[in-house]
Each structure stands twice: as structure tokens, then as C-alpha cells.
Length: 160
Ligand code: FES
Ligand code: FES
Image (cartoon, rainbow, N blue to C red; front, top):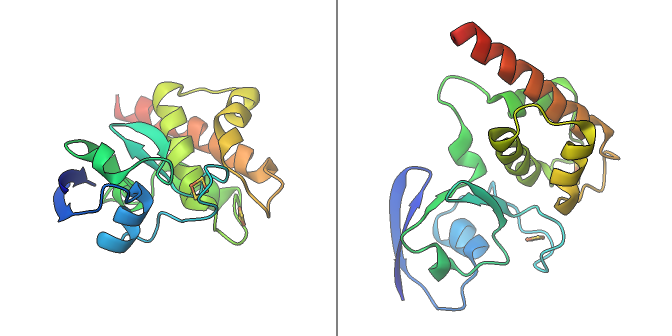
């Protein structure tokens, strides 16, 4: 099947098998390897991207499902002027160790703050409950998302 997908603001197209998973389209066809492929069983969340602004596990979706839609990967949230608040939060609060889960965590956290700019710890924990991390114990990830929420709000107030 021929598909056309807006990926990170750029129209990409390819002939794909109907069974191709979105994660493989992103990684193998487009070379965007920032989206990680961890379990292939919809458990780990390492493959999380945004589909029309909503976080999805790209190993659970067929590439043909994205035909005519917008996909944002970790490469696409770069603001062009610096790290996003969520990326900065992970840096400031040391929200990663090996980094394998990090792209998926950042995509999930970014979507959370878009719909809930001031989440409680419980809301952060609930949001990332589909993203597994084998290294950090999650505490620093929670702090990283909270750091992003605080600084995101501060930036909005400065620019208002
Ligand atoms: S690779 Fe998609 S959830 Fe693990
Ligand atoms: S930092 Fe290693 S899996 Fe999360």
C-alpha cells in the first residue's frame, strides 16, 4: 500500500506492506531511530510517538493507520532554539541512566503537559505508567516532569 504521512512536519511517503508496524516505518523506512523498539508487545512504551498529538505506542499501530495523519517523533519535538522544558527537566533532574526508555518517556511527558500543565505526582505516575524504566526507579523521572511543568509555566508567564 502507498502511504503518505506527515512526520515531524515533513510529508513522507512509501510503499509498505499492510502488516508493517508504525515503529518499523519510522525506524527502518525513515531512519528516525530515536524512537526505540523495546518489547514489541505494547508493554514498555519505548516506541511512544505522537499520532495527531496523542501519545501512542507505535508498535501497536500499523503504518497504514498513519496514512494521512501527523506523526511526531522524539526528533520532531526539538524547538529549533534549544531543548524543550521536558528535555531540560530530564537533564536537570538526571531522569535517565541508560537512556533506552527516555525518548518514549519524553514523548509521554510532553503530551501530559500539553493537556495538563500542572500535574500532581499521582497524575505524572499515572501518565507514565505505560512506560517502563529498568534503571532509575522512576523518582528522578517524576522530578524531571515536575521540573518541566514548573519551568514551562514560568516561561509562559515571561513571554505573556
Ligand atoms: S516496543 Fe512498543 S511498547 Fe515496547
Ligand atoms: S534509563 Fe534505562 S531504561 Fe530508563
